[in-house]
Length: 261
Image (cartoon, rainbow, N blue to C red; front, top):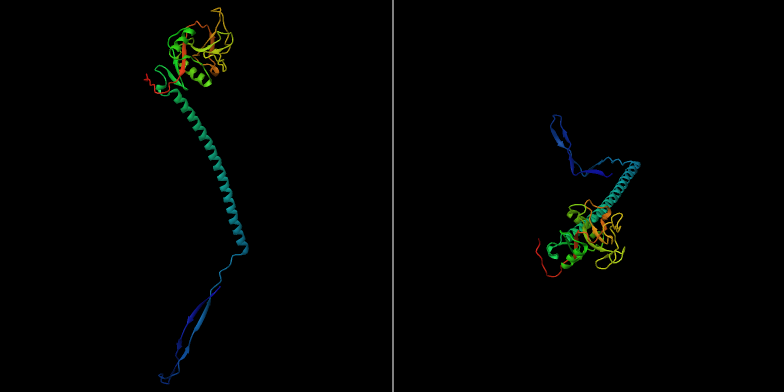
């Protein structure tokens, strides 16, 4: 360690002689000391033992290592949480979009369908109040520019099943649809002459029961007041039976407007 230096400069000391009487009789020449330097050594600071420094260094490194491990684990957990949240949000958005689309299709602008008709999926539907035979029901639909309904898929079947269950007053309050095997027994055809593909028959149907008429049951009606498993609510019936009906036609496009009722 460096020494602290104290420097004194031009320090003068005077020595005098006294006589017998005690009075000063003469003075000796002055004695002068110049540049008197005193040095004071500062105590050296004790150095920590080498082993102690190594322990401290290892302790610091260990602390840094555990902090890094903790940050990595926290980062991994955060990434997993973000990924899970992203999947959930994406799924919720898809569900909301699907529900919104279905709601828009179900309650679309009333100017797409004539008054008294309901809009759904690009089509207009009319659920009759009066009852008539299958042939008469079809004639009434065609007079309105449509035909008895042709059910193309499960989504349309689900929509119609919900609507007719709300409109039915009793279990036998069924609705005619545009499906028949009048031309050839067992060969079910829609009114647009396309063959039946997706089927929603009640269990045990069609049975072509001939207890009421010799020609059997060649026309199809739908509806189960209490609901049916897997949307299966069709059964064949005599075409002369009076039932309500479901008419269908394309939605209105262009500039034609109808007043909502």
